[in-house]
Each structure stands twice: as C-alpha cells, then as structure tokens.
Amino acid sequence: MFWRCLGILALFLMTWSCARAADIEIGTLKDDLRFISISGEFSEGDDLRFKNLAISAEKAVVLLSSQGGLVQVGMEIGRTIAIKGFSTFVGDDVVCASSCGLVWLAGRHRFISPTAKVGFHAVFTTETGQQDVSGVGNALVGSYLQQLGLPPSVVIYATLATPASMQWLTADDAKKIGLDIDLIQPDSSPSASSEPIPFGGSAAASYAPPNADAGPAALPAPIWQVYEYTDLPGYDLPNMPLKLFNVDECKLQCDANSRCRAFTFNQRQNVCFLKGMATEALQFSGAISGYKGDPADVTRTGHDFGPVLSFRTTKEVEILGKPFARANGSSLAACQDQCVLTPSCQGFNFYRNGVCTMMSARKPTRKNLLSSAGARAD
Picture 1 (cartoon, rainbow, N blue to C red):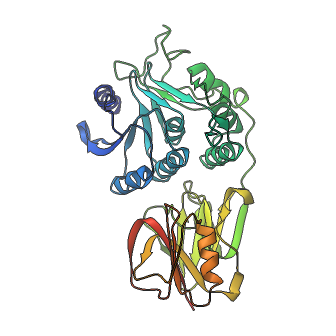
Picture 2: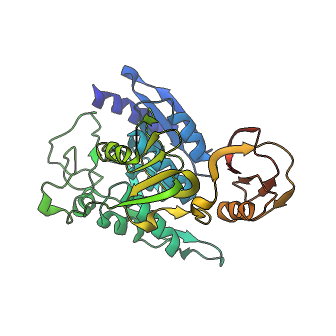
C-alpha cells in the first residue's frame, strides 16, 4: 500500500515540478499519506514557512524539485525534516540539485525514482564576481551532515564537485559512500529485475551497504559537551518539556532517545527540553545545556558572561515599543553584546535583515518569525 502511495506521489510530482515560482504546500493523498511539496529556488524565509507547515504533520514525505538556492535555508529545512523524522522523495525526471540535495539527505528514508537527478557541489560565494569555493560554507555543510549521522565519505562526496559542475548521484556511488537510499520503481513496488536502470547500479529497492565491511569505518560515539548558563534555542522534539528533577535526568532522557542530539534543562522550573540538534548557544543564566559532538559544532552567540549576568535571548520573539538606538548591518552576537554592555538597555531586537534595536523595556512581546529578542532577567 505504501509503495502505491509513493507511485501516486511520483505522478503528482511530474506535473507539479513544472511550477516556476518557489512554492511550499502541504496536502494529503491516498490512504491519508501526508506530503509537503517544495518546488523552486530556496530563498530567505522558506525555512520558516516549511517549519510552520511541518509542525502540523506527525508523519510526512517531503517532495523535492529544486535547482537549489540559499544553502543555509536548505540546511534549516533539512534539520526540521530530521527532527520530525520525515522521509524525502525525488520523483521521475525531477531535478533536486545543490542545496536541494542537502535537504534530500535529511530524510529518514531517502526515496528516489529511477530517472530522478540528485546532485551536489561545493558551496561558493560570488563576492569577487566569480564563483569561489567557500571554505566556511563547506565546513558548515560538513557539520550539518555529521549532525544527520552521515559518514565522512558522504561529506566529501557532497562537497567535492566545483561550483561550476555537479556531482550527480548514482546507485553505485551510494553504495561506495555508504549512503542508504530507497529506489521507487515505475510500478510502485520494489523490483528484483536485473535489467539496468537509468539511475545506475542494480535494480534493488535499497542501496544500503550489504555489510559492514563494504562501507566506511564506524564513527566513534559522540562526546557530550555540557555548558552552564546556556540555552540551545529551537529544534525541540515533540511533547516537550519534560518535568524532571535535575540535569542528569535530562541527559539520561536524551541518551535514551534515538532522535535526541541535545538538551536544555531549565533549573528554575525543573523542565527538560530534548532537541533534535543544536546550532547556537545563547546566554541564559537559569539553564544548563548539552549536545553530542565537537565544541565547534555549536556557535556561541555573543559572549558567555557566566553567572554574573541574568540575560536570556529567544528566537522568533520581538519586544514591542520604541527603540532608543538602532544599528544596521549587525549580527545577533554583536546586538546582544551591545545591549549587555549598555546599562540603559533592558532588551534588544535583532532582525534577519541585520537591523539591531536597543529597548529600554523588556515587555510587551509578540511572536515574530523574523526576529530574535533578548532581555535582562534580573
């Protein structure tokens, strides 16, 4: 039944992929199969639009058709997919390239049709007027793929091609780099045929490595990085928070959950937030946070002022009122630090367009998907 539903998705994707404008939609097909379709170039705000739609879906397949776009937006969409446990799908004669390929890799099951094209290349910048490989960008992609649990061989494969070229994935390549994919045959069921297929390799339904020796060596178990006075915002798993007594119980709950990669324990309220991953660490004097990985995997936003300062920064929140100071071209870290170091500043707003505003009050607040707000808590 599930394979027939994916067959219907493939037919739908063939017609839908002709859309010119970027579009993100959610719907239900046969047998109550939910899908979220993403078509067109990834642009600013698409990750937030996807996240808002994904919240309402317990299980879904994400249909992809895109030449790419902003790599950071693609990785944020991929993180949401990984946290929700969604599968990804690229249908017949559909292209999913560049940052779209990074999104496809985030699927719990990576479905692909025989004539689909999934491609990768190195991250680049155009600051000099040319396509120059971005070392920082590729490092961020590497960290993202490691957070997804993919081996180093996949990281190398996804960033090896030059910006002007494209590394198109084949079934043989998937085997070699240890990437588990699921091929959807035209008859909507796994095929045991030995005939060659356009996608390459044999016509088996799954191209997982047949044994441990065929793939790369297993990665060492990730090491816990734990920090006091710190919050790891966003990426909460469903049904959070948990009412627990201490941070050790919070960490044990994360260890016992296969989808948990990080946690934040609020010491004031004794609640635990398990998280699918973490990318930023913010000042929060009433919390202890931890994540599995290397210290470089999470970026400290602003200075760590430790216990001497009670200050909290939260994403997707805005403090209302008239600011007493405003700056353009700022960053979240610089905006937070400036407020902390300005005695008259009780809070700040930082917007995704780089605008930073200093506020003399902490309230009232409202939800704003395009801003982060910080306020003194003392």
